[in-house]
Picture 1 (cartoon, rainbow, N blue to C red):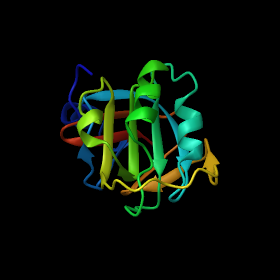
Picture 2: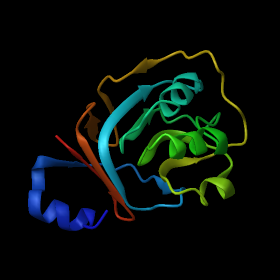
Picture 3: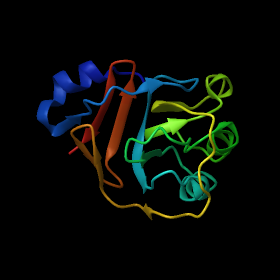
Picture 4: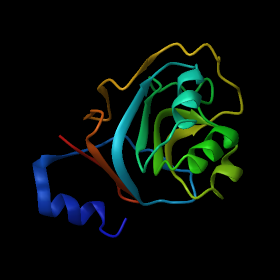
Length: 155
């Protein structure tokens, strides 16, 4: 990403929602952008794995894990699949695992934190629906911009 989120906000203001939730930068790229795809799940990463194993075409997967840090919704193997499939980044309102490996991948990753505990694999949840957290609504197809300052998404 060549322009900062601060500059984007200065230029476009209220056309962009600013995510107030303080997520950690955990991937090898801190700046990333792309059209939004979504998953809503809680402590079950079956849908996250399925989506990131499909062509990303530069998209950003936004995962609403209901803020749970009881289990990890993504680890190094799923993140490596995201890289192989052309995803720009992943934003998770929940946890990840394998932090050291994630930091080496050419992928933007923002999440609440980490937990080594695996999640369920039952694919319970929803895909490509609007999800809300951090004061923003993430609609499939809207463009998301992220860097060290935070996340902006088209309203």
